[in-house]
Structures are given as C-alpha cells and as structure tokens.
Image 1 (cartoon, rainbow, N blue to C red):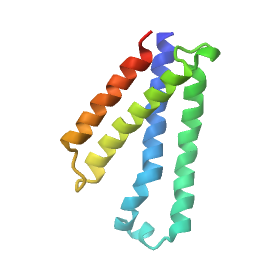
Image 2: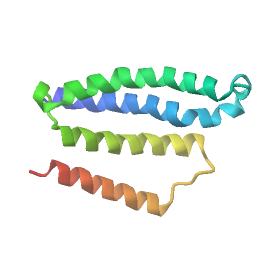
Image 3: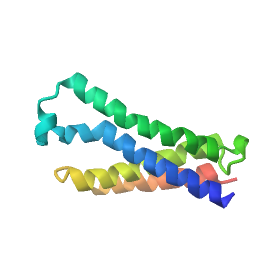
Length: 124
C-alpha cells in the first residue's frame, strides 16, 4: 500500500509539473525568439501538447491511488492531495521563473490552511 501511495504522489508531482508548464509556461514564451512570433492558436496547440503528458501521468496516478482500484486513497483524499501538489509545484515554478511575482505571507497562510484541509480530509 505504501508503494502505491508513493507512486501515486510521484506521478501527481510529475503530472503537475507538465500542467504548470502548459498553463503558465507560455507566459514566458515571448522572451524566447522562436515563440515570440506565435499567435494565440500556436500557443494553445503547444500547451495542448504539453498537457498531453500531464494527462498521461494524471490518469494513471488516480487509477493507481484510488481505493476502489486497490489504492490507498479515497476520491476526496486524491483530490486534496492533487490540489496541495498543484500549489506546491506552482509555487516553485513561480519563484524560479517569475521572479517579479514574490511569495508573500498571505500566500503562506493560505498554504497552511490547505495543509489543514489535508489533515481534516484524512482524519477518520
């Protein structure tokens, strides 16, 4: 059961890395010569291509981790884990690539509440 939990979380982390790149990475494309001339449709198609990798990891993560498939997590737990991972991956991405968007105390307070959400979702 621990192995499935680790595999599920690992796949969710990788999935969210692709998701974050697809959803927000294109905001930095204008700084790259090749991408700077692409129109909106070109950016959408590139983002869809990146998102394909997200789905290719997200779907197996949920299937492996879901309790009705022999995994350790119920549906509610999978969703809360997913959201916490999403915000964690996004935070790292924003700090590394968008240095003009600082991490503030109110963001950290919000993350504390998300950790509390995880606690309450997992509480029996």
